[in-house]
Length: 116
Image (tube, rainbow, N blue to C red):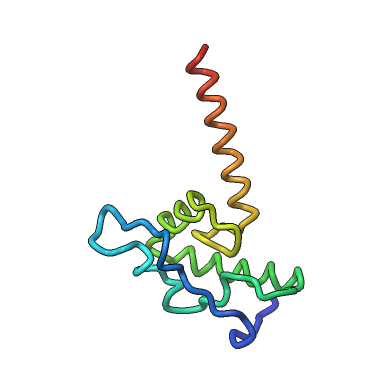
């Protein structure tokens, strides 16, 4: 697997605006996000990133997400906003678009079922 040097990647941060507070704790969910502590540059693509490098970086970011205690909150944030770039909650932007499309289809099917 291609390993990119961390210095060449853009440093990303979980934005402080538009983030809902966690209902089960006093502080906002993003305060516990693993990406705030390490490998932040993995989550957003540098400009003109080659495909192989992007895929490798995204897989590395997903591994960080997999060990994050607030992965579900992060994913829901990205789906509700919606966040158009980066890896959030273990999903790439393309994967989030698929999830959103499935949710929309499910909502339409439920409305049809309720009307029948």
